[in-house]
Image (cartoon, rainbow, N blue to C red):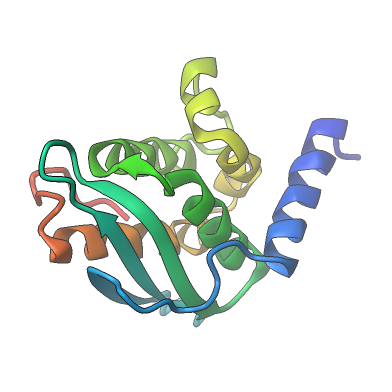
Length: 162
């Protein structure tokens, strides 16, 4: 039997899969990426919309996307798009690294500070116990990373580890 927290996380994933945030490709984008998980066929076409103020850090204004696949991949993209909207590119990249660390923690979770930064994305902690599902959860994050690199707003110095 699952704990109340696991049930809450499962419900959050299902809610995002049924009513995804950021879905629908918007015009006026800075870069886009198309990613496919060959293992299961999940796919995402993601666009990143940036705000490049002359006097400050480049900010992810929003992420728009279309995709198909399992509820885990679609919910993860939805949560990610909500999480990174309005954040500096550097913060979005850090969130991606933290989410990748969560997926490699094999269901053990991360420290409280890291999980606080991830917000609703911590709902995917249990997914990390199933190696075949980790790529599903990481699909949108890989597309975001690729789009940020293509836009020139992110460097390629971080380790590539989808």
